[in-house]
Image (cartoon, rainbow, N blue to C red):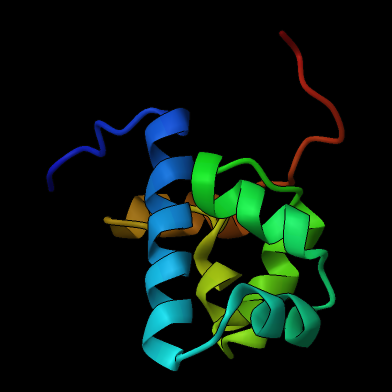
Length: 100
């Protein structure tokens, strides 16, 4: 497995570029997508130009493209690779707070 070497900033720009490409491939003007998603046109423009956007607006844009399910893998626990890891995951209780 190749590790992801992108920084958070690079990831922001990559997501913004992908969103813009989806918009253009769908034939939408910024105004059209902004209205469909329920976000301001200024927020969409800022996102496409800088990668800056609130989580709420990012989810709204994703929903407008019918791609909200793409977020389902985020923050999922890692899959067990051995039977022992699987058993440990089933038997252990999730802590209520951090220790460090």
